[in-house]
Image (tube, rainbow over all chains, first blue to last red; front, side):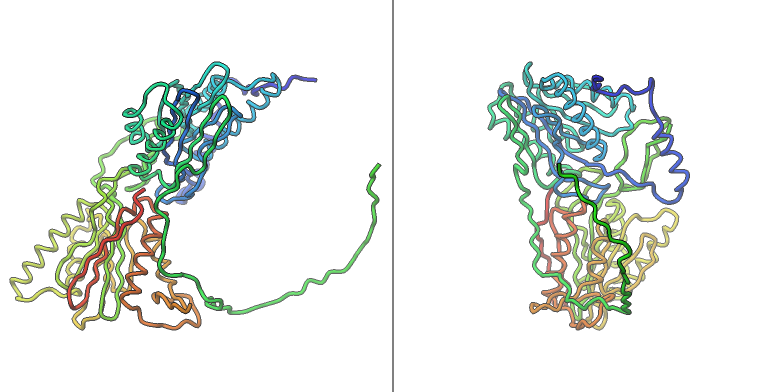
Length: 275
Length: 247
């Protein structure tokens, strides 16, 4: 039996087929808009604490200036001990993390081990560098493995940083302010959760691209606690009047009913082999 | 290699994405967001705006209303580039004073609208980046709404939304009519059959305006923080402020 490879190694060099296709598309559709990718315009943050890692994210997805999704999930599952927050182009973060998750589960099945965070980081870095920034994914990876608690960030061009706390996305500066002020090494669980919550909250209030609810994911040696939502937005819409239309408001101009004539052409009985 | 450096015009988030030669041009305009709404009733007019001033992804101020009082019977709502909004309102104020001193009477809403159209067109080739809506009472005391484009084309309306969330608010107002027991807002009635055309009361109009802004704040990132509603009647101008989403 052939050993399934962890990652299919692509051809040498940079693969820019899609970039060339995009240019061609733009030429074809000139005048009309090429479809704009949905960007998440986000605040995501991560903190390493005494027993593990806490990841946090807001839940708003924007399509330029319109809110497309008020409750989108930005904390993605990679493996039972690794989760990843994604900022940037929504499709890119989804697909990249899905691909990574599939590859790591193949690896787990092959080797019988839980993957290490550094392995996930290396696979991501390799893939994103290969695409030279065309994949717009800013990721925060956090996880616990046999060598400790780790938090990494991977940028769209393939840069990697190993850090005890950080924030990414359009609201990163606001969140980082809170993190810089409140971070200490070896925080307790509740303190770490509160720190991440208030940093995401700062991002939500100061940044137009972030908003709505806050999701938190706590990863420890004992397991994962994915709290969604950790804090609901305090702004629930309360409208005064009902805006429903009475049936019959839209005028029906003509109605045409065409009966479908069906007749049995052939009937055959095939016995199932239930041996 | 494809140039991913899209400018997307004023107001769109810029893509900070280096991919080849990049030409950065100075743009004299900025987009500061904000939405304005005006509704005319039988004997009242309402001009409402949100109070958020933003640029790019940041918020400059949560308390910068876009309604400006011109006379006792006219309020103008301006959204777009805040620099041009301020200058334009200063110019209108000065012109109002000049008219008052020459003609010994206050300008009527219709006259202000006509004047604003000429002011805007005088800058046809370097426009004021402002979306204006004037709301007030006409000579007969009926509500009047005048809506403008950045270069001065205008018309009288019953209701109009302008600014960043205008595309979300205008269709809602076009179709509003309700025949439940607690008969609510009656405005627009476009494309509807068998609905009673009841006149819009002041209370219902204010409720409608509040609800419509709550909806806009849900989905438009540039709209939020607070709502300033100015109700214009023959007794004067009444202002109220209602909080909106701050995130």
